[in-house]
Length: 99
Length: 196
Image (cartoon, rainbow over all chains, first blue to last red):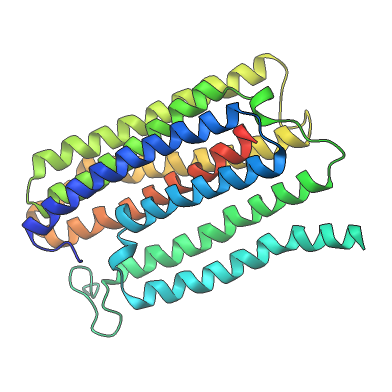
């Protein structure tokens, strides 16, 4: 839904406030989970899942990505592919070490 | 010569030009921070031992900063929504709050940094602090950049509201895209550097 009319924007404002509350709750959850001092693997997994969820909320609602044009999605998909390559570099280095 | 498609969308892209421009800029920013995150992972997996961020860094201050930055993202989007609802004075209030919160973030960061420096901890101390100061320093520079742009739109730049309200609203939308990106980077930095 593109927020163009005043009514639509008013509706979006309610959504922004809900997203804000969700982000605050998730921040508290992130800190609470870290105080449990889980094993490194579990801690990384949980922290990254929560952070990704928070990032999705920010990008989806505040950056209006849920209702964006195709060209922006294409740009971001391409960026995502290159980002994954960057993240794969240290992993490939790790695998090298194992071999 | 008039710059084309500042207010209305181009037929082929469906976007006003500046929006596509800012998204392309943000794509390059993803790669910039991505390279540093990748370096962080490489350094961490390659180290014989790696400290827990929560043993070395100030979690309460960083948590407050997370809350501050998320709140500033909300005030930023509310400043755009205010313009969409043709309420300029509310825009000024929300944009002012965004700038103020950004300063609060920097002050807290300053307290964190000087706390480390006073204990003779610098980027050269060890690899953990080297990557910590590099990534948070670069993020801090982005916050300063956001303050400069937002302060312009809050003050002198807001004159455009009278001459070309649609273009001004678009400017606030894309300044918001940048600001939310800065928030988004912090959402990952906070757990990765401080909590793991």
